[in-house]
Image (cartoon, rainbow, N blue to C red; front, side):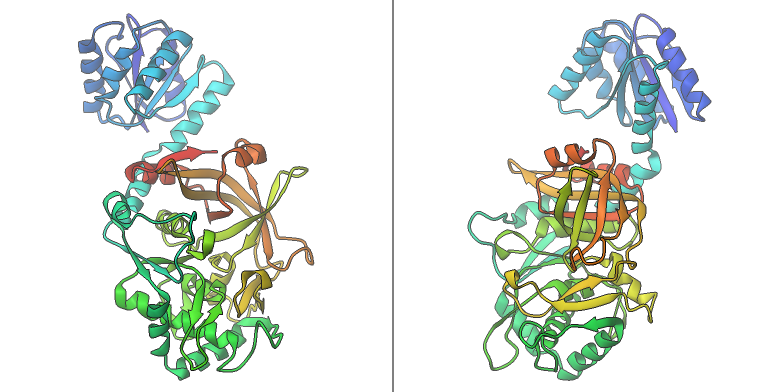
Length: 467
């Protein structure tokens, strides 16, 4: 990385020189200031502009003696990349932090001497987070949202549950939010040919290790509850193709294709098939889909999180799960698959004879008919590097909590049929997670994409909160 160093002192001092040497030892190209900045906005402006002309990709503000805090703001106005505050002068460091926060300028922190190993670790972490490749990937992912459409299929949210401001989505993200009510979904469902439903059931039977029909919640045949789920999946798939829906959320769905009135159908299987890259009709482009939502109104924030991760990870499948037990003894969190997870289901395209999936009756508490998906214990391998995320709103402002971690192991057989994996978080661990997280759902993609997701959020005016 090409890094500029701006020394806030009478002249480039021993602290900034040692920092420059340390960065060069690690392979970075360092551009040092010609003179220190100790007073006067003109000096701060001219030195920062010189670093910008040198194509610096990040700028380090080094404080090893006291200077007026306003100088940092003058310099930040002209900085060409992300800013890191460092140095051993606490007064200057915190004065600059206060001034920059006052004007809304973001920055990193690594207070102390570069000889301190903990300071070195903080700087290395910050540089990884702001690597040019990560920033470019994140900004490109944010741009890919522009001009897309998000579909919301199913019932409306209840009073007090999160709602979507469609005008804000369009102005802030460039995403057109399109609700489809129950009558519209039923109309699309009636247009699905019976032969397609039957072919879907045959294909599904071939993909599953077992389908546990119970004669009540999960029933067989072209008029059974599994067929209702398949029909609704095909209806939503057709609608998404016709309406150019890039990603969507499924609330509680109702099948009104027959003469028996409207029947509540679990969205778990339709969501899993939408997220998958193959179905009974062949290979297809996944439609990123989230399920759930307070009050039965869908999970638009989850769909937005998943779509952003999908773009950042370059079309990798995205996990969507409910948070289960938080285990203080081990620091692990159980993840309960909501049926939207493509971590396991997408493997069906690669393992035609794998049969890692079992369909069981949907949970009775969900109040809907059809199947829920369980995966074999060995179908989900441990993933050593995972990026977890969730977009929510706080006081009306969008924020995204981001955490690095890992999928450490599958659930133990027999503990819970729907639990397929456990998560462990790096950084502050479980305690930090419990203090920051504010949603019953979590999304993840394999790999280290924290820096890219942070950059994408900043491009979309979403406040990134790193665990």
